[in-house]
Amino acid sequence: MFNQIRLILRYGHAIRNIAVRDLKVRYSNSVLGIVWSFFNPLLMTLVYTVVFTFMLRDLGIPKYPVFILAGLLPWNFFNLATLGAITVVTANGHLIGRLYFPREILPIAIVVSNAINFLIALVLLFAFVVIYRIPLTLYVLWLPVLIVIQIALSIGIGLFLSAIHVFFRDTQQIMEVLLLAWFFVTPILYPLERIREVTRPFVLLLNPLAALIVNYRQILYVGAPPNLGVLAATFVEALLALIVGFFIFRRLSHAFAEEL
Amino acid sequence: MSALIRFDHVSKKYNLHADRPRAFTQAFVRLMRGQWRTAGDEFWALSDVCFEIPEGQMVGILGPNGSGKTTALKLMSNIIRPTRGRVHVGASVAGLIGLGAGFHPDLTGRDNIYLNGSLLGLTRREVDRRFDEIVEFAELGDFIHVQLRRYSTGMQVRLGFAVAVSVDAQIVLADEVLAVGDEAFQRKCLDRIRELRATGRTIVFVSHDVVTVELMCDRVLVFSSGQLVEDGPPAQAVQHYHSLMAAHG
Image (cartoon, rainbow over all chains, first blue to last red; front, side):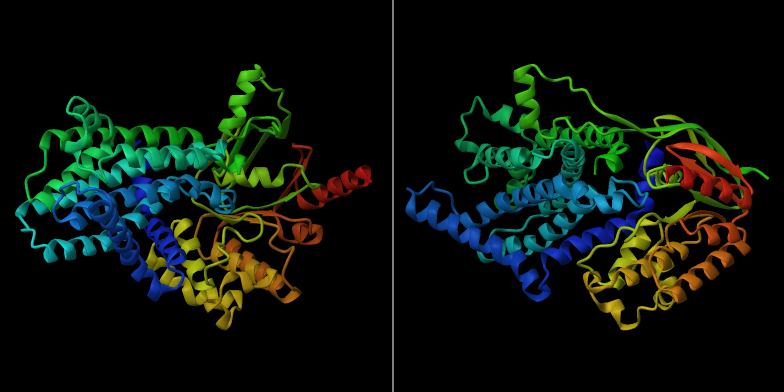
């Protein structure tokens, strides 16, 4: 296991190159591409704000754009990283059949490129934080911790799903539906408080994305310390996902070259 | 001399399983109908192959199409694993297996060199250092800034070969590198292979070009239907190969 991790780290340069390639392809028109990183969440914020503060009866959520961005950006990161990772192994079959390299670097690179995209989009969130005069507290320093936990979680899930997709090619379609459901059971469009009180602990414990978003909101929207108990649970879950993901990927990756 | 590459009763089975469910939905339907178990076709690409290659030797591999040559190379480079037996490889491997060697059509030649180099385990600085040499060897000139999809087959093979031989691996695998590329480039490749050989690299050379194999290799393995049928000096092995081809008619 540790040998494997060392090997993957040795391929850090390759992870970077694949991540850059992924970003380049996404931003094929480089100038407009970076703009899209802002523009897409900006437009979505506009849509959600109009729907949830004008069209629907007011939910009574102040500073709605900050509220929605603090949930939407982490979700977009998770959603895009997962969907991208699922197909990355099959899409690079030509590399796998011809070169030996630790196959783990493919889904890892996709998570990395989406993390970079997320960091860029966070600038937009901070802009809204300033515009709405939400006091920036020192609790913001927890942000890197949350991001690292989310990256670990995404890599774990990405490793697992990308390996499964090699053998069952409808994993992508199934996950698209599941991720849509996951989006709605996660307090992104609505605050955690709208969830029935009896269900809340289960949501926080069983849905690491809900737990992460609650804490993103704590530090960026409320300006309060994160819920450390929830954070600790998420950390354990992410670590578990990472270990299980690695283990299953490792077992299945020996057969990749033959399946692709 | 110690064996750098050792095949110890190596067999490789491919499951052709044309029938295996390839999607969850398909698997579900099968399960409902109680047809889970499917008779899969098996194909033994290699069966019970044993050989050793000592350091510094240049070994040719001959054999008809589908005889297991590329499977043997893939086992050496750890792309696939043996079904039975053990493959021991005692040093770093670089090689060109099949055309294209894992390039991305949407990226420029330059980006592909960096991507490919990094996948072969080179750091950025190591690629930097080799970059000019690779471009020069591949004779790409200004095409280095062009997307790979616009390259001719010959250009792609040249680039692949140039990157593969620049890696400084102890073991160099070459699969049909001479099949494409004009005569001038073939000569250049052979010169490069001779150079590598002179510096003590271990080379495994797969080709249908019998004359070149006989001329350049210290020793030749002949495969037929997944079995190693000959392992000896080039002249003898080539004769065996010819008789094999004659029998195939």
